[in-house]
Image (cartoon, rainbow, N blue to C red; front, side):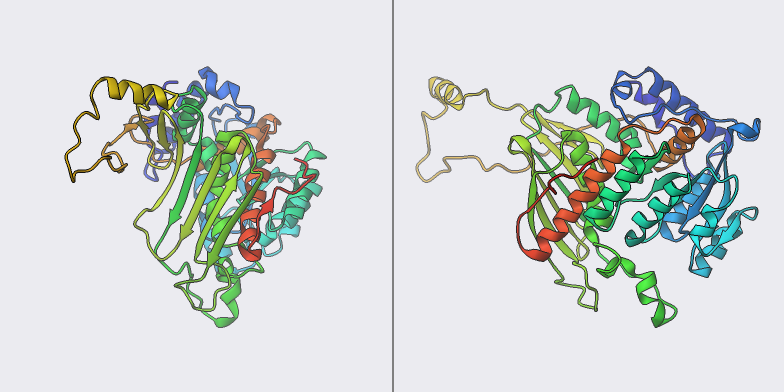
Length: 431
């Protein structure tokens, strides 16, 4: 795969023509890569010349113009062939700020009125978690294509309802897990499939921050609306807002969903009236004895965020985009022991000296998965892919599977912590 072509910067300052060229370059790589052809969900991108043909233009509406919604708005404005026809938010300051960036868009406080708007092709949903399922179902019912931010839904039952509705629909669905479109993670997956690190034996993921995760509230009556991530009625906190990303990657690389999980959560630092944990630790059990270990906290950022995919031949770190190779001893272990004795490794052991070498972390910088600088983490590419799927009328295969596997997995983890028990994958769940 020619990842040199993907080092083009897609920054805020990149001219529109430059961004269009970036998509063209990506399309060339996608179209010629055996990896991308083998991945059932991937639809190669092609840049659309905005404005040259009205039939090429995709008309979308954005539901939720807060933090994440504003980022999507910025990407939509830079995506060729996309027209932002409408914005919706029930919090007036967010809606007005969004409309100021897109003067030609219609504004709505009720998303159901926006769904009735003639000529609207699809919607992007960037609202609090508890609203995701309801809005997805209403959008499918209205015949719209749907891009929904992670995590998929607030409950397992809602995940099932959205999956069923999509199955009955011919519309495009895409989940906001941008790592599926990241050149770095695509390269990592290619290396894993090619056996570069051997069989995956464990995945370790973490996301550490240091801050109270609160938004400023101009009036106490807006506390729950603006800080919904802190309250159980609207969210599952660190699991649905952060862990969902890394659980999607784990399921994706393993090609499996977890069998069960167990874990602990606590509020051990930010004791300010919040209801959701500021410290979570969950272990997921997969087929073949593989474990995925996840932890997150918001009182220390030393380790930052990372997902480490480990095997006997090496470790891949997706967030930093590095490969760390290893040279493991041959199996079975007795062969190594015999060879060591024959070569006199253990002939001399100083009295009082160490008889073993501590297994400290290797001091290595590893090698980069993708050369050059890539400013986009996959979000801009995922927005372009959504628009392109609508334009071509070809839903991206496997998207709902990725959404359900990650969405259900993090809900399992939340339940395991709240109920202090091992939680199994829901029997009979259909994707």
